Length: 615
Ligand SMILES: Nc1ncnc2c1ncn2[C@@H]1O[C@H](COP(=O)(O)OP(=O)(O)OP(=O)(O)O)[C@@H](O)[C@H]1O
Image (cartoon, rainbow, N blue to C red; front, side, top):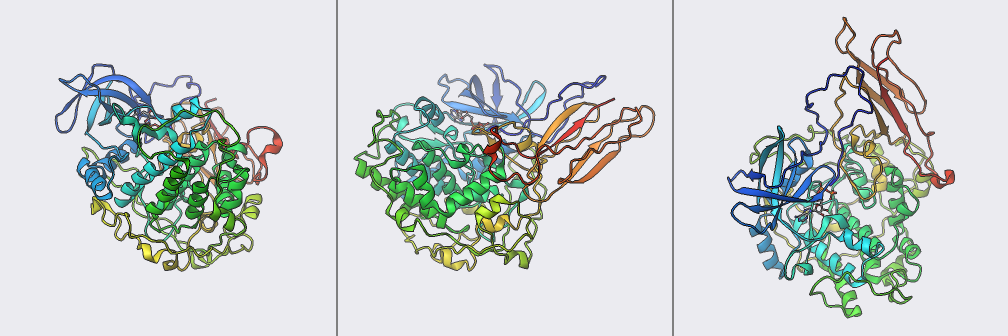
């Protein structure tokens, strides 16, 4: 997955000494590995590197084969050792995706195949003097994005439903280990290779895997908006890993695969995560009508039912995977498409009857519920543990310091939530105007006993208690809604992790926001564009090291604490000495949360430009 690049110098400082590769905490691009290189894994297995077959944002994937063999049926994913996501991915695989566990799960659920990858080996290697981490996994085939491209961003309806079923299987497996994936998208779904391979799709890229929460819902500013902005769930926008979030992400993908454009894409909001978040909240709040708008000639029944169901799940509720799958398999039956054989990516010529925007059936549930509004009282929230470094790695990676997620004050907890539209129109500080309570419709209790795995294949690292399905929505007296939580988050979210700011534009790219704060390099000149979420009143804190004065002080820190509502320029002394200047400039006006299309150009996140240069 593409992640955050190390900021590159915009222009080298006059006499900048080429710093030896800084031990930055930022994600770095891997060194290129030459074909034929042999990697030795921790178990002393040897892998010959073949051609590069995929480049993620910061990792590269090479075909690989065991030394002595010649089939290149494995891949090696290699990233600089300091990069967190591959560390996370590796540990997820090591703990939760053992071949034996996968086999047992398949047996238990009567599955011929399961799109859950596994790890073959892992290790560390020096490439061009840089320590890299690598994992070896089975090699798969094409990813779905290729077919979407070929088909004008659509997939055949039956294939969409089959993929939905297969991805629900993977989710069910993953969730049973206590983890969520959080980044499902076409580019992360690969077909199997070889004979019969194309019957099964595999979900890859576990760089964002994390324990889902089972307790209170507590937004985590450090993880807000993680994922791929188009599909990030409302919970993920708040930095909270939940199982319902995975389902929501799947839902957004399914909608797209059926040929509809997600509203936040249509409205060109992707550069402003908070706007996307609000658009999703509005979308899900009235999912029936939202879908009707997207599919004016009738909502696909399973999509309507699925999305409706997702919108009703509480944050710690175990999804009823069987029920969800049954909607898709019934639709397959109706379409007379067998849920077996190769996945078919050939589109039939579009007619009004097979056009994705005019499906044959409509969702009864969706129609029934269309006018209803989900309202959900506010709740307290808490954050579950991060994946932590484990003893089985050669070197610990500490992606995040133990965070102390802010406790929501009781008053804030009980705060009512303003209607989304109002929230979207006006930036809402947490203590803002009276907020209107949304009443969450009481979801029906759902049968759970069927094929839902009660026992995880590897319960070792699962959160304490899996939420009891029976006590689903009712067990939670005040089900948390993303909207409610949003209004209780800290007043400002400033992504000084370069995840958002330095990525340029989204476009299906994974964003990981953590505490990887850039380390200023005092002997370089560069320019950052930090995109900031200033939908709420925010203070900007910029710490920039001043360049050494010729014969005087050592580096000093400049700490500018600036209300974002003002444009300002804060700089160090302008005495001609080679000091660092810090320029904070607010690019957009505050509160441009309204219709961004009015300007006729792509909306930009209100941003602060920090310039650092020598005089
Ligand atoms: N096991 C595999 N077999 C074959 N190709 C793979 C495999 N894993 C990944 N790829 C290819 O490499 C691409 C990037 O893989 P992956 O998502 O794991 O890396 P990443 O660095 O996390 O990038 P991104 O977020 O862009 O997908 C995939 O889209 C896919 O095309």
